[in-house]
Image (cartoon, rainbow over all chains, first blue to last red):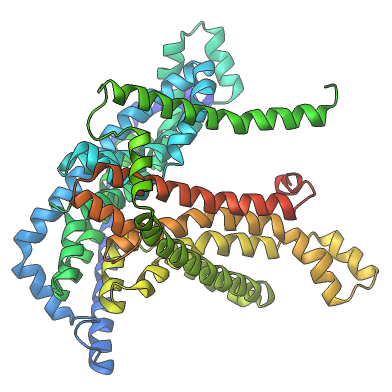
Length: 275
Length: 262
């Protein structure tokens, strides 16, 4: 009951309050960015200091300036491979979200179906992606398809599990209220279970996002055609230390970008929880 | 049959039997379909994969043995370090938080991104593979051991105190039994990770090993060999899990599930 009242009031946030919330959000965001920039700067200073103090051989750790140069000189290469990894991770995430949402809705609506297919789902879940990636390469080929299938494989279950938990989150009395009003199964899902499950869904999506980048890079090791995973492996084999470090840092950046993308999606959908 | 324990055992056996039966059915179906050329070329007949393995068993053992040894070495090293770290953290409470956060840090390092770097530093030989295996399986064991060493119930400890048990007796009859369920939980989860970590490290460069075999077979488009390597990898990680599950059954004869539920 209280939940329905709460969601009804979300559409009528007072403009002044909304403006203040936005201002404070912008302030918080810029403070956070400043903090991130400062810690990166501190890390670089530490890095350079360690280089001067310990003088490690160049193959162990390159100087920051060298890595920076690699970023500038090889920016086209890094963009080429980075955008491939980023887009295949996002595409895979979208595919596994669609699958997970439809499967979760089916499972919640039809108990028997869920019970019958659970062993199958658990079997799929315990398949190690690192072990069966070669099979996927064999079946799907050395293109972007393998990337997407591996990403789906590693990102599907976190979304499904969290979504199932979210769809079952409404408490008994709310469900009974829906029942008393004679809500159909679909109305029950659309008006009650779906809004309840959104925070859970985004929790799952964030975990899946981290897995997705790793899955994409794992697939790129095997397909050996494009992507940051391929670039990291190749530059390691060719002893291009500076490019290797630039590629590793790019993969961290891509992971952060995916995290930011999922967080932005969460904020834009769950704006009512901001308050 | 009125005996509930016997009925429970029967049900459990059936639960174990069902996946085996499903697997057998799938194998038979694959055999039947490939004989009729109803499956794509990339799915070979199970008998063809088996025949390929039997044609040259030396290839199988030559690649399987190094992976088993490296995974076991990495696992053992990680287990030893995890046990020592957990023991220290339960004795010196100040160190508890740093040891745990270090474990979280190790766990969140993406091995896919850093293994090539390790290969550059340590070479593409066994040391890199063992290190990656250890890094891959350290955290679950640390968590299990830390929880296990902290799992002694207060009133049981008081009882031992009242009965004036010696420290060694406390360790033998109190600390170890109450830690075992958690230890086994961590060790079980970690075992497949060690195998998968080894294989991942072998992808970054290895002469021998299941990961190397996968790459060779993929490069040569040797479909039977790819399947063979993948099936062996899956079987190996499942066997590593089953080994610890079996050991748990043998060692913990009391109802540990009841304790974990509390």
